[in-house]
Length: 516
Image (cartoon, rainbow, N blue to C red; front, side, top):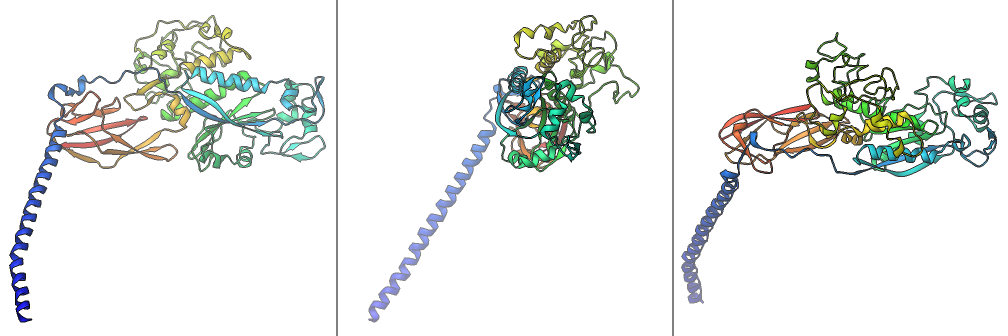
């Protein structure tokens, strides 16, 4: 027994140096492997940094940005139609039996035609930047609800007309009815409509959160007394009607008149004007809002023109803005064509002005010189033969106006989208940019990457953008410190320090870059 114990002890003593040798061997080889792996990583990193051959490195001043072309992106735009046009149970209007038909039909109005015309006008004029899709139609079998009570035929008060009162008001037709003292006496013609009632009744806020629609059209038999357009949602702002603050992404509620289809595009046009005015920092210039650098000036001279932003240039008309025959007139607005002398004068064939309207087809390549192109309303009046249904001077003008809204790819150097339909669709724009870090360090030949910037939008929503490629909206103080490859990826070229300005929607942030 003693001999066995001694043998075990001896074996244990002999195994110790063997175990130590094996352990040493494993540790030594592991370290060698680790060093090799580390070296390979460094070599790989170095290879990545130097993978751009010198012949393929492009100086920033020699880099050619992508051509700006007409956008071919077609985006579905979901519309929820709210049809407030009750079915009548009795009565006659101008010898038409109203029993069993909608109130608008009894007024000899064609609701379906009005909606189809509007869809066609917006799709055509946007160059297919948007594709209107009627997602759903909600029919409400009652007349418009107001914020103030109205007097009924029976002497009582209510917040909407009943059938008897409505039939009595419109018994001689639409024109007499809309001018009836009971309609005119409701109060403020705009702002009387109870939007909150519709929003609650149809649960619009939750449905907007669920992305059921992008925009709401209110198709309401008269009297409606709506605004032409309002915005609803977070940080909602004026788009030609009092905004309604709600906890959802902003959306537009736009009036669609059954009785006056010639005015419908104007509602959309004013909404577009106001959206763009917000995007361009409330710089819409007209004779009641003089240029901020010369508060006494109500005209545009040649040296002023270069200082205007694209939105200001687009909206210029001779009557509201410019010196006679200046040749700086743009496209105009929803009330004035380039040569209008008064509101809603769409077919003035006598007054001649030189306009830059045709240059907007080649946006953003506007010329700085005065235009010698004589504007004539025939440019849109001659399009009547291409349309069916309601033909009016207003409709023809507004289709033309919408068709000249920029609808191109890319961004300007100030970071504004070259496709203004982006702003119409989103109802928001960037108001603040903040980099994740104020300073970044790169090594020579290292690509610019992982530079993240927080974008805050007008509705307080936020996203992260990553800066890596050289674009028109990036301004580098010392361009010689960088080069790019053919895709525009930025690379550190040589040691030094500089600043990069990154622009979006007229706002910018500055980032310090140190190259070691």
